[in-house]
Length: 147
Image (tube, rainbow, N blue to C red):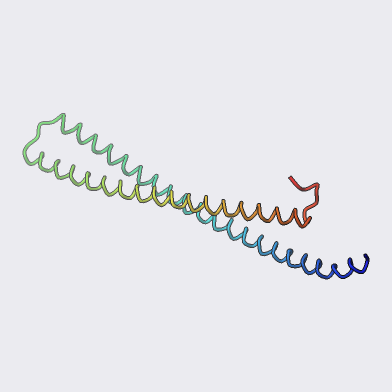
């Protein structure tokens, strides 16, 4: 019985070394994924800030439009004034369309980033779960640390 134990000790030692190397690699991968996640979250915050700035621009444009509409309603206009106001309204409408397109693009980008983060987080959780299962199976984790 002792001879059998001694013969399996080198194999178990080698296996333990392999698992330790795998653990170091896994921890490195987890670190990289966390850094990538933080990078994506930074991009998301940046996109949201830009979106909020564009939304503010849109709100300001709508405010200017309302002010101009009020002026228009309160004054008598010459034909030249009416043409000028119409052209300004058309320019504001074009600008509003551009802002809406940018907003939609930013919302799509934010959604894609959120989906990427969610997928990466799910992958990370799956890998952590697999690692914990293997560690428990190999009894690398003391019973007091489980659960």
